[in-house]
Image (cartoon, rainbow, N blue to C red; front, side):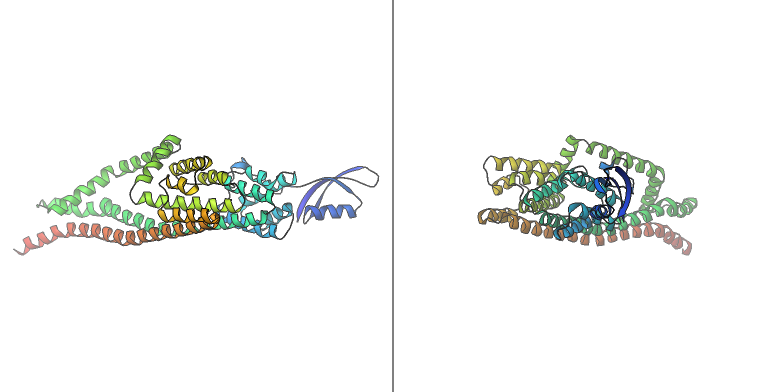
Length: 402
């Protein structure tokens, strides 16, 4: 049940103020009419305090995908938008989602369009969401647009989950293996090597190397860690500046291997976003500019924004995208076929699906090779440590038997 503050007039025309609990605003108005009151104004009472800086609140990826799917389903059922937002807000278990939906619903009740209400929360609803919702409201196809946005949010979350799952195990394996080696070098090896030093015997090369590594870790390890932290913080500060961020993103695209993966990820996102916008009735030029804004690589975003300018000047989409040197030949051919056949939206979606499959396959192959190589490398390091410790012991045993 929700609570509503209302202003009304009774049968004698006297003003009354009060509060009522009801399932919805329509239900509250009905109850008041049955009591002989004429409702002049009504507003839902906010039961949860909005966070300070409400426009900076962001909904997580999983919660956003669920919210979009629920909105799409209930709008398709023909319910009023304010009731839809209220129902989704009640079903949500995410506190931030509830807060954002409360603020959006209040704006809708005040007469704002849904797109305008969403624009007040740019961290959750970016340019893509607002443009598509505006197009859906203008064309009367809001339910279809919300369904496409729900598909888009779910697809992005699935891709993010796949990448996270692929990264977690190698990262944990690397941290554990590095921690074991550092512990051996800093705590275990010095105590063992100390016994050899007291015996004043000539040590083999492997043992001397191990001693040098152990001394380096004990004496310089903390300083190296502090230096790495300083470098990381400095890099983060520099990457917040557009000029340095653009230069770094340009460098990433030029790297062998990594650059190709970044291109595949960004071109797939661009094609999918452009397909959704095009299907939703957003003009192609506006759709191209919006699609360029959702990319993670700043250099790719600028190249594709320039492609939109070339299309505005009369060029074809396929030619404009070819000049960016970002898209592989297969994607360009599919886009050209879509332009010729009048099925550009469908071909963009197929191209994005194909590119996503290639990207996932490359990531999976990379980590499937990385994991055994890392195990072999760590085993080699541990084997070296063991041999470096055993060799002096074996030499001492030989001297004792002679």
